[in-house]
Amino acid sequence: MIPTKHDSIALINGLDWSQVEPEHLIQISLNFAIEFAQTVHDCIPTYHSNPLFQEFISGEIATNNLQYEDYHKTADHWEFLFHFVDNKTIALKTLLDLGVRDSHLFHVIKDYLQFVRPLPPDEKLATLVSREHELHGIFENMLDAHDWESLGYGFFSYFLERHIQLDSEDGGHDEIAKRLLNVKKFDKTLERFWYLRYQVYINLFK
Ligand SMILES: [Fe+2]
Image 1: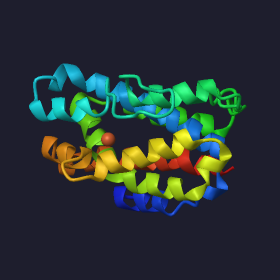
Image 2: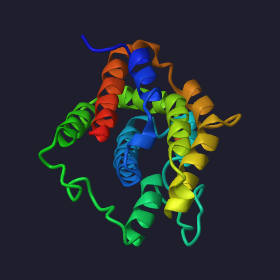
Image 3: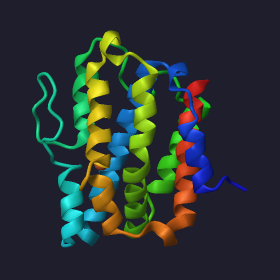
Image 4: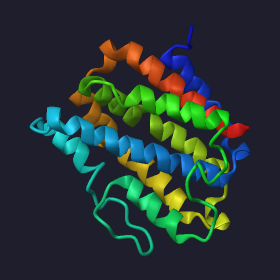
């Protein structure tokens, strides 16, 4: 028996991110942002003519709604993180570089990706809609966990703050996404999705 969606999200919201290395939190956020963009792109062939989907993706991919220091690109959000991770002389490369190839973290990330990648478009879209609703709360906890600015990772607090704002504001991504798809009938998919997501997060603590 895996926990309900509600319970997995509550577990994630109860995590104390100050106990996770800041660099690992940035790295996993980059990995999830890459997967997010891929999942959005996978939904395009099915939903491209839906005006709400068009409105939704205009704020998520090929967008200029993240502007910070020397970054002024029109691109997917992961490219923002990649830009700064790549520019810093810190050990922020890939999870493989972090030496986790054989670790439990590596396997749970694989489980997560192997679950999401083959999902049909409507289930993929359900995970996106659910993320727009839940992630801004999770990001608020991450934002408070470290003094990102003084660590030299101001780009990451900007990334979190902008997502919190874009997702939760009036007429923001959460509201658009909710109108796009009612996720009620996707409970089983979302239960699995948030459980695997929790498994990835909890394994950052080791
Ligand atoms: Fe969003």
